[in-house]
Each structure stands twice: as structure tokens, then as C-alpha cells.
Length: 170
Ligand SMILES: Cc1cc2nc3c(=O)[nH]c(=O)nc-3n(C[C@H](O)[C@H](O)[C@H](O)COP(=O)(O)O)c2cc1C
Image 1 (tube, rainbow, N blue to C red):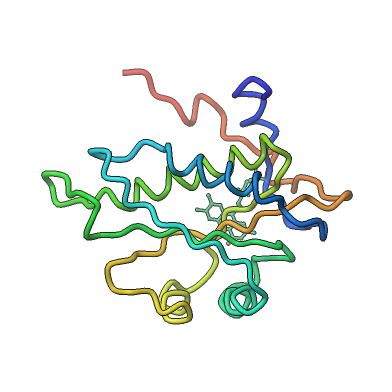
Image 2 (cartoon, rainbow, N blue to C red):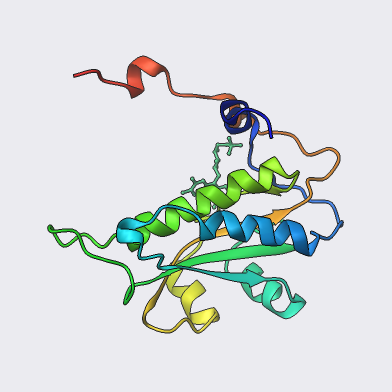
């Protein structure tokens, strides 16, 4: 592995995938990165659907144009009967699912698999399409796959907020 900051800087959203399949061992590593993510009270409410069959891929493509031609799409959810509430009523499930997704995205990049975080869809349509039970809350889609040879970062990738606008020392 590269040092973490190099990996974080180099990772970019991949929107063109090659036809090469993801090996099972690599997919497993990506899923393990979700398994070991920190979660509130260690509740581990993250639930991942591996969308891989042509039938399921067609379904997800009917919900969003942002799957591109990725061979696999991970649908990240959390089980709200498992996640905890903060004292102000905030349910941590969303936070837990988000960090699990970030872990997978970075692990994927580390082993040569591209990804793009996708929230450009109507959640109600996604949930209905996959007939998610009431306790599962979908949070994000993560198309993954080997980047196409000519895949490159978009301009947006290089636009970083300035430290002075991002950080306040108090
Ligand atoms: C919450 C979230 C939602 C996003 N939704 C989409 C999306 O629906 N479609 C898409 O192509 N990219 C999506 N992205 C990717 C961002 O556009 C991308 O991360 C950003 O432009 C920075 O580029 P980079 O990831 O290449 O560094 C999303 C990213 C995040 C974190």
C-alpha cells in the first residue's frame, strides 16, 4: 500500500470501466473493509447488497444513470433496528453506513479497483425497485470495477477547498 495520504489524494471517481471482472478475492477484501469500519457502539448496522447479476444490474441502472458500465454495484444500507440513537435522537446508522462506504472506496483503490460514490437517484425508487424491507435504509451506491485504460480524473477531482476555508482553529 502507498502511504495513506497519497492513496487518499490519488483516488478519484471512476466513470469508465473495463470489461475485466473483479476477482472474488478482491471483492472480498473490499467487503472486509466495510466489516472492520468503526461504528457507533460497535453496532455494525451496515448491510451491503452486491449487485452483480445482469438482472439486478438492469434494475439499478433503471434507477440511476450513474452506474456507468461498472460490472458490480454495491448498495450500502443500514439496519435501523440495529443502529443506535444519540441522546438527541440522532440515529447513527447513516454515519455508520457512510464510513463503511468510505472504507470500501479506499480499499478498492488500493487494490486497483475503481469506484464512484453515487447518490444521484431517488431513494424511494431505489428502495421500491429492490423491495427493501422497512428496517433497511439505503444510503449510497458504489459502482466498482477495473478502470478503463483511458479513465482519468475529472476536473472536479483537482479542485480542493483551501485549508483556510476549511479549517478553523479555536
Ligand atoms: C455523497 C456523494 C454523492 C455523489 N453522487 C454522485 C453521483 O450521483 N454521480 C456521480 O457521477 N458522482 C457522484 N459523486 C462523486 C463526486 O462527484 C466526486 O467525488 C467529486 O466530484 C470529487 O471528485 P473525485 O471523487 O474524482 O475526487 C458523489 C460523491 C459523494 C461523496
